[in-house]
Each structure stands twice: as structure tokens, then as C-alpha cells.
Amino acid sequence: MQTKMTEHTKNIINKIIECGRSGLYSDLESLFPNWRDYKSFIDQIHSEIRLEGNEQFLHYYETFNRLSEKYDFDSLLNLIKGLTIIENDHKQGSVSPVIALYKKLIEKAGLFYLTTGDKQGIYLLIRSLEQNPNTEIENLTHWILKNSENPYLPFGTSTLISKTIPDIKIEVENWFQRQKETAAREKQEREDKEKREELRKEQAAENIKIHNAKKQSEREFRQSLSNLNNNELLTLISNDKKRPIYYYSNELIRMNKLKPNEKELLNKIIVELGLNETKQSKRLKKQLLKIIEK
Image (tube, helix red, strand yellow):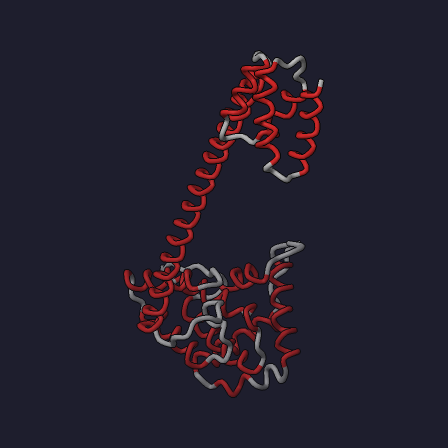
């Protein structure tokens, strides 16, 4: 069974509204002597609104959205004022009900506004106020910024520096321009990164293609060596200025039954090989000398 807000809660809210309307905020001190009393009152509103809707869970933001529907524009405006003053002694930070109530008041005024947690929502509100000026909203905004000690009021963000609508307009437009520039720069960086990645992939594919072509050429060259006789092989090796002699190690050590002219060619290769003091060259030289001696 649905229940309604208690008369006790309604009476307290009405007292806060009346203080906001009269400007006699000293009367609020007796309502909430300490932070715990105020927190208990906020929790009580939350509980009663939740039970009223017969719901097991309700986000605090939705709680005050629904509370705002119970009051007309003028009452809601003065409730916001009263709560703002109360919270100077009993701060609620970024979860202040004033944030949600302020947003609903703006909607009641027919303006567009989002609580985004940054200056984007404020930018949208400023644009909406330019198209549909509203003195009451502007005056309330100035009043909150002047009288509140909670840096999150009324917009839900603590990064705003300016205290008047004209200055806020400049600040949020500068912020929005920086956001656009940052977004454009990040987009360009992503595109550049994608291009670099694409070029890297293309280069990698080209390198693989070149590598495979070299391997194929190498296989074909090696295969062609097996078709050469001793004289042709020795002549090729003697004339090859690109590859070291030990490149032909396998072909050289397989030679046998050398003719005199072939031994002469091999001797020249051995002499040239002797100029290289690497272990590979020394080992190959010994093997070739044995072949000549056969």
C-alpha cells in the first residue's frame, strides 16, 4: 500500500521554504542544530519518497526529482535557497539535494540543462538562457554562487571559478573551445596513429615479400650450383666478389677427381682463403688442401 509524506516532514519543508521566501535564515538554525539532524532529515525524505512509490531502491537524485514535482516554481526556488543556507553549516558536497532541485527548477522554467559533472551541462544552460532569458533563474544562480560555501552548488561541479552569468558564459565557452580543440587533436592523433599502423603493416608485408623473394632467389642459386662441374664451380667462386669463399663450403668439400687446371684454380682460392683468419676460413682451408692432395 502506498504511503504519503508525513505531515512532520511536510511542515519542516514548508518552514525551509518560508525562510527562503522571507530571507530570515537565522530561524533555520533551530531546525537542524547539527549535521546529524540534517542528514537524518534528508534520509527521511528519501525513505518517504521511496515508500510513496512503493519502491525498494531509489537513487537520491530521483528522490529529489520527485520531491520537486510536489511544489510550484516559487516554492521550489525558495526551498533551494533555504537548503543552500542550511548546508553552509551541514555540507553535503556533490550529493547535495540542491543540485537535483536546481536542475528541476530550470526544467520548470522551460530551459535546457544537464548535470554532467563538468562544464558541458553549464554550457548548455548558458546557451538556453541566451535563447530564452529568465531573470528568476539568473538571479537564483547568482544568489547561490554568492551565498553558498559548497563549491559543488548549484551545478554539481567544483571546477567553476566564475560567480556571475556573464563571467560563467566566458569561462564555459573557453572550456568548450578547449574541449573541441582537445577532441580535434585527439582525433588527429588517432588518425595519424592509424596511418602509421597501416604503413607499418604495409612495410612489414613488403619486407616479407622481399625476404621471401631473396630466399627463393637463394634457393634457385644454390640449386644452380649443383648443376656445375668442378671447373665451372671454381671459376664462379673465383669471380664472385659479393660472397665470401666459405659461402661455397658445401660445394667445395664435395669436389673430387680434380684435373690439373682445376687444382690450379683451387690453389688460387686457397691462397685467397688464407688471407682470412676466421675459424671458418681456416677449417675450410684444411679441408681443401686435403682435396688437392688426393
